[in-house]
Image (cartoon, rainbow, N blue to C red; front, side, top):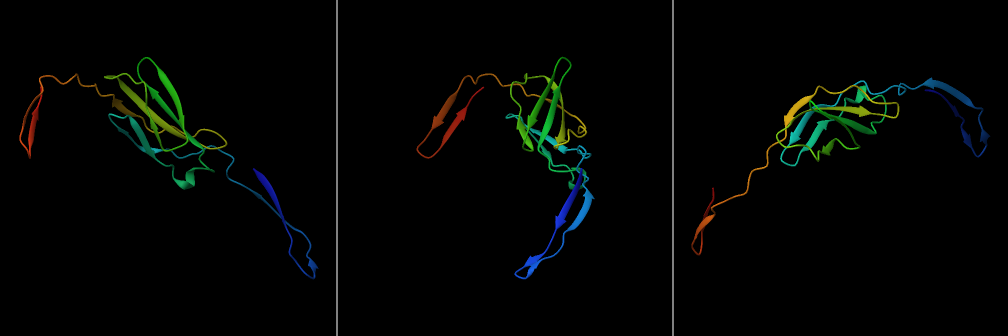
Length: 142
């Protein structure tokens, strides 16, 4: 993006002439860096990642695209933070997850994918028994 800035000085005695400075920003392209260190905290399925290196942002990062896929479907999600809670995923299914930073120009490259398997919810607890005293308790289950 090209720009021109005009500056002039002034005080109680008057104003100077205008001085124009022309330049070009380097923010006219999408991010070239990738989000890295993707990590999924289970069982809440909180996906986090590190921010893109400052020199490769090419402007203000306004959000992230999160791509989640398996053998039968691909989800495209967005987040304005460096985390997202992944809902509605199928337990026992393996997913590949990648993240890309987005600025006002567009989306940058995708991170290397991580492969995660969504944990299986355990079955109900059965055969609960307890032994208690006034200062302690032992609880067991199967």
